[in-house]
Amino acid sequence: MIGRHKAKRLIAKDVMHKPVMTVTPTMIIEEVLRLFVERQITGAPVVDDNDNVIGVISQTDLIRYQRRAPSASAQSPSYYHESDGEVLVSHMELETPEGVIVRDVMTPAAFMIEDATPIDDVARCMLQQRIHRILVTRRGKLVGIITSMDLLHALLSVTKSSEVH
Image (tube, rainbow, N blue to C red):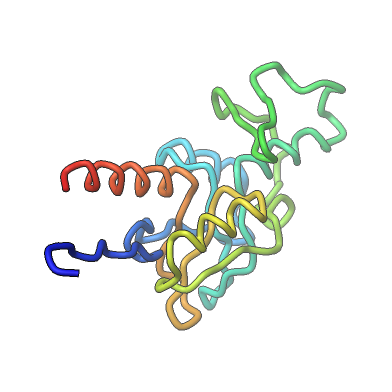
């Protein structure tokens, strides 16, 4: 059609965060908590010595671990609550036994997509799997991460640009 331009279809690499902060399976949890607070993030991929993704650790994993710990009280404090499988925290002050490392707490699986994946497919996957972050790869190597907040930002920018036209 003359006079209309086709809108660019967003793909994963258009909205991903890079570089990705990663953690190792032997990192102590207190260190991870500090990184989450400093970087204002809620999760990170776990990589081995060869930078292969072996899992993910999230604030939800940390809360669930604390709830299962023998020293945990029968009821979690009121500032923790679950919403669609994600534990929302009003602040990050967890008591973890000394010596607890990422391997003890992490989810040993990660959802990954290629960087050329259309953003609507990314959103569909996150909704179906009920996850809040997905790792972005290029030819099998980790190149970025997309969170549910990144998808909201992308939606907002597309909405704003369509209002301009």
